[in-house]
Length: 350
Image (cartoon, rainbow, N blue to C red; front, side):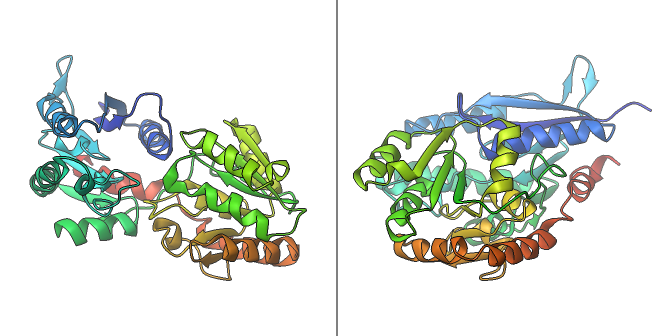
């Protein structure tokens, strides 16, 4: 029987790699492992100046993915903005996120919300109109989390179904010990609020170390912050870490700090829990909160370094509590798998 051809669609910011890239790569791999013929199709994405946003929508709209090399493409799967603009008779959307600067971040100057920049309001209106037209073209509309589903409903009045998927190294995460460091993993971006972790060290036990793994535009600022607060000897900036080191870092942390602003999903949450580590997160961290419960698998606090420091102390000085919270969190996420995701996304070609 001839394999069904599927294109997974991705808007790629050149030289930037994060959760969205892992998602589309893993989805493509999982489809191929289940006897589909899947290919990842990417187009470079640039969000500035304003007209580039609309140009990106048009670029996706103009692509012909009806067939390739004389063979029919049976299904396309859109992910984040503006991939869902593609024109195809069998288009499914698994929404990673829309262009948030046109929605929940539209009035936020720190994140260049469209209402805060010249001509931005006009561009915002165009994006909303395009989303309202293009997203409902999909035969089925899914999202990666309840948080993304709720945004889509709130701003566009469009319904979607959340589909959770596991992180990349499912089955390899493990727990070895509860050491003397709290771990932060991910891109060093303002939205991830790694600065709060560094500030919290001034309110925590002097023996606590913070290991910060990842690269990004905030690195210099974070290094300077650690120096200014005189905690540079307690902060280790690890840069990019390979898979083996990543698993080792999770395995020996006493806790994981992950407190982004209204996160869409957040692999770090699942990676921490699958490593039987409790988290410290914030009450406005979005998708993170779908997997943790306050004081059972995580401490959910205000975005305040004093509160974070206090919770770090509780965990650092009570490793048995870390263990109990880690076990509780692990049991809540250990059964998340790709099977349900693939079944739902491919139901129109089975």
